[in-house]
Length: 577
Image 1 (tube, rainbow, N blue to C red):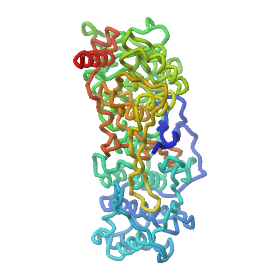
Image 2 (image 1 turned 180 degrees about the vertical axis):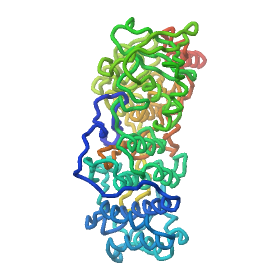
Image 3 (image 1 turned 135 degrees about the vertical axis):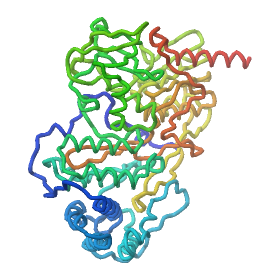
């Protein structure tokens, strides 16, 4: 089945490098929202009690009929429950406090047409074994929560809908509580609970999180529930979201707030190559305006080693794999105060050069990461090879490009950048001879929060004009989200091979989650797999032949990945004859 194009847009929430996104920390404080709660410290017992309340609150939010039908204000109910739970002097008293709060939400009517969790096509089941933990919950609270689960409403959610034609979760019914004065422990706890439970019930790759997600909640509460200013709480949220291990999981920020913070940066883009931070592009029109040259390895800035800076900021960078994390750190690692700074580099020898951090507004910072070839979208490289890069391609031009490439033996499709247009079907269909499955999705269920079920398979249908030669697909750490989905489709051609290195491993439409304080978080909302159900999250699009850029190649101005692909394709073609 061919999915509607709307399903496959796979857009980023915020293009990496953009300086235009609104940052909630920059808004003026207001007294329009206040929970009236201040937590100066948490004992171990209080932290555990708050943790349990968070789990119960999230479960009730997505399963209780009185919440699902909009009768109960679950946010206000939480704020009213926190003091009694924190004041409990024993586990039993804490359990009674949570039970009283759950009961205050109303009776649970016995279902007439009860919902069940069908096992057919189930890819990920809800994590609800804790509902029967009578030691943790106490027998009465355990029974009450299990009763709620057994009598949950069918296809009804107050705070979550599913995007039309796509199926990822949509959280646009959440109150943002943007105008609150920090510190406010009540809203801080609400923000933590809201995001944590969104992941717990609506994140398709929950089973791939490296840490125990329960432990992440407890650890975050111990630091982020304590009263603190907005900037410090923002940092705690960033740390929490980063622990999802998802390249789409982030808090929207302006450039100057990305760690390390600063109003300026060196006028260059860095790339992490061979375990070093390498100058890859200049961000000023006149390269002579900077003392840094393409290919320079930056060792330290202002006598602070970049390795130390990277280690300090690492907890603030979420990613599906390490290659992507280092990609993002490299783009921000020269941030800092404006003005002159000494930079230790390795060129042909160790040097200390006088450089200058300049304001972001003076730089030509690209909205997206791209490592593809300069020039037009379509190029004839030689008599036997054509080249097409997707970072500035238009779907309407695909037939023209395919016709121009018809006389060549090889078509190189460069996906080392975010596609300028959605070309999965227009380009993919030109490369296959018959209906060709290339991807399968998992989607959430409103009746079973936490469950993800296999959906239909996406299929390429052959189109004219048709390209009959061999296809080389170029990928690397800049191949992200829709780029990865496009590479999946193109590699479905039996004549295609993938060349390059680890991609971002973040595939699937993005869901955004408003959080108290005006913060906006995001995460992947649907699962994307190969037709045989092999995953793409974290692992990314694994190349058939590994080809990597080197420091020497960058200094020489070579595109080693392109060279590697052409050499391999020509050698293989010669061997076939």
